[in-house]
Amino acid sequence: MIDTSTTYGLIPRPTRAESLEGEFVLDAHTRISAPAGLAGVARWLQGALRPATGLPLDTAPAFESTDSPTATNTVSLSVATDLPAESYRLTVGTDGIVAEGGDAAGVFYAGQALLQLLPASIFRRSRMPGVRWTVPASQIQDGPRFGWRGAMLDVARHFMPKHDVLRFIDLIAMHRLNVLHLHLTDDQGWRIEIKRYPRLATVGGWRSESQVGAGPEAGTDGRPHGGYYTQDDIREIVAYAAERFVTVVPEIESPGHVQAAIAAYPELGVSGEPLDVFTRWGINPTVLRVDDDTVEFFTHVLDEVLELFPSAYIGVGGDECPKQQWQGDPATQERMRGLGLTDEDQLQSWFITRLNDHLGARGRRLYGWDEILEGGLAPGAVVASWRGLTGAITAARAGHDVVVCPDDGVYLDYRQSDAPDEPIPVGLVLTVQDVYNFHPVPAELTAEEARHVLGGQANIWTEHMDSPRTVDFFAFPRLCAVSEALWGAPDRDFTDFSRRLELHLARLDAIGVEYHRADGPLPWQARPGVQGRPRTREERAAQIAEMTANISG
Image 1: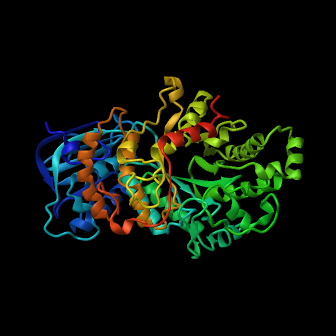
Image 2: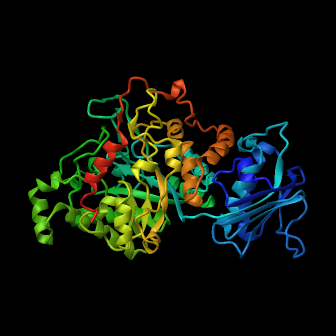
Image 3: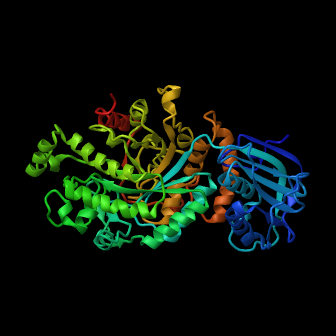
């Protein structure tokens, strides 16, 4: 038997894949058969296969014979009761294909595997004459290790137009990722329409210019930047993602990273003075005024968010909140005394807990960065552990669920090599192999504690990504490695992955993904003369240890 996963470059690598004799050929008579419950998957598969093949691929009623699982010249979709949720089994014979899943998501992933078995031209969006649309006879069975397989996309620092967000959803779904964590608000922009507070988008949604490069000496471009999603845009994004079994988890930052909100409504700030939307990168000392009116404002915002996003998890940020304004403000200090709080970490915890209570009463769970552990964690909150693994270990040991996304493993804005032509090099060097070696479950956890690890995600911060083309360059092919780290077993082989990736890159070429090549950036992908902020792994480890000292227990 030939290992089909290696021969045909399947990513992520399936648990079991073997080749059989012969091949199946898509032709003008091939049909797609599915029961009513899989009609959406059938429509998606039809839409994926038709453009490049030019074939009609009409749908047909589900094949119901108990004598054979396959109707002749048919791609048959079905749910198999012996498979777990999200798992799939794809059987390709010479006279038909059976795509089975433990649920509709599993059938969808079988369809994604089928696309990868076809010539890479299947990913082009118009008819490709002269291609023989063959699928090697094979059987593949697989299922995911983790339920949370995500990518965080920052659309606040640089706005991504809706059609590019939809394309990004297609790309992560292709790689069996099932969560899009959408970072919608920050100091530099507010990207979602809130009808009760329209100035959040119309004022907070644009800035006068943007910093170019990293560090305090970096200049600005003098060019306004902005954009936001209407509520109808959000509904479209969420529905499009759901059709591809991707859950969109929104994030509304607080109580730090909020200058865009304060620019729209100055009364939210500690001083109450008017401010512009922030034009610099980095940690901003401007934070929210923490009182009942501010809590009410943000719960009203969250109520509109809940109507748009059915996700069980709602992000509220909680990261990188400097405490200097609170320390120097008499009203804040009086408020703390009235609440019986002894330090500003407890004040942040009080604020986050109010949001947690509001979300919990509406059947949702608060999702925040690991700083929400400081000062005490709100009951039921889920922690995104980004400052190494300390947050994951601390939260899991305390019985809290965790999404693991350490910056030294899966921050895809970090430089991809130490070559001098890497554009705006920041942070550590994170090669494809470094990312491939990401293991979401900390070794320090017991088996019982490890059950709190929901999974992991890659984070794509866009301070230095001013276009979707640049997001492509930083995200791929490292996101391919993330997908395999989150999907499959912990014992992995990078040499084998590299062989499969060579074949997979042809698919990304067909789609038009402008990925980082192994020999470095193309001339137009470099940013000569724009300074970065590189760090060694040792420097970053020391910084993280200091940052997490108050949650390490």
